Image (cartoon, rainbow, N blue to C red):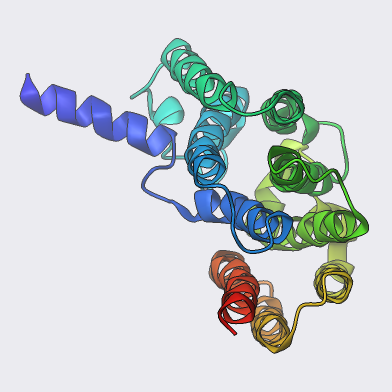
Length: 292
């Protein structure tokens, strides 16, 4: 009995990708950028806890919905053929029930924030839940994912009751471009399988210009982040963070140059560090500014 419980828990954990937290980090970094910038480096502690917990819940629920929507495709894709819904370890009804529980928990958290943030959170839920359907007909679902993954920026500004100043819009643009770039790397891993199944992605859309498109998005992301820093009068620590992000972007270009699946996946996962160094620059800039 105990073995069965542990096995079911493990299957649920893999369904929700708790064994692969990179998605949580990629969703969380833009939120942390915005929470620090919208509060002058001093985010409200309650707001911070809600955003971090909400990010984990939103990403987990999104994975469950994605796997239900893609369960007839995942068995034909090398990277996803062992997912619990494909192997039969978890039934679609169970996945949807888990999604409902996670959604209810997320709503309970968001209910403790102000009304504008609640409305934006509802829109974020719609974005995350509808994303899996777009790859069937929309040629650039990675762009849509960029909107969904960066929706935390206006939410953070709303939670701190700051509106949406120009710096917030350039930060939103940076997050959108970044997500589009790294998810295109991710799509390069599955490109051949997706093409066979008739699914859409920016890796297919850009074709042999995929590296150029990714590089352009990375460059524009850095420009948008630099513009954000200029508008908020951020200093050397922030600039150092952007320089480190640029170096990481260059390394990612080297990894994807031959379009090898494993190296493209490595390039994708290394974006955790891009988000980290940008956040470190933001946090250190505010820390040393307030302590001086």
